Amino acid sequence: MIKRMKYFITFFFFGFLIFGMWEWIQTPFFTDITDEINIIVWYRVHCTIGDIMIMGFSILFWSLIKRSNTWFFAPRGRDYLAVTIMGTAYTAYSEILNVVVRRSWAYSELMPMIPGTHIGIVPIVQWLALPSIILYICARFTRGR
Image (tube, rainbow, N blue to C red):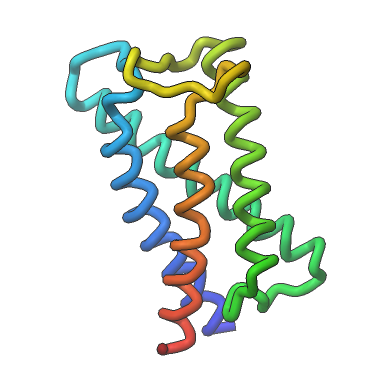
């Protein structure tokens, strides 16, 4: 139980750190509806928490599919792949929903697009790269290696 708690504390810490940095780095690819810094900071924190939730649910769903709640201590290739695919799939859906349907946010002219879609490449790259990095760091940290 303590080991799992340590893993999840580590996950939230590194998830917030890594996803948070990404949210700030990708800022030029989105348009903000305001130039008020407190609202911009809130957007970045809000999106970072959303990223952590997406990854957390991806880990949960993969744990249910595997019928194991210990795989994340020593993830294998298929574990990295499953969490990455789930997070990327949800992100693609969310981008279409929030950019096209709800118009909750918008891309700047700097955002490269996936051809034939209304999905920006930058959020997809995020989900192809960051979950594996976070899983790896958390597994190493909790194993003590």
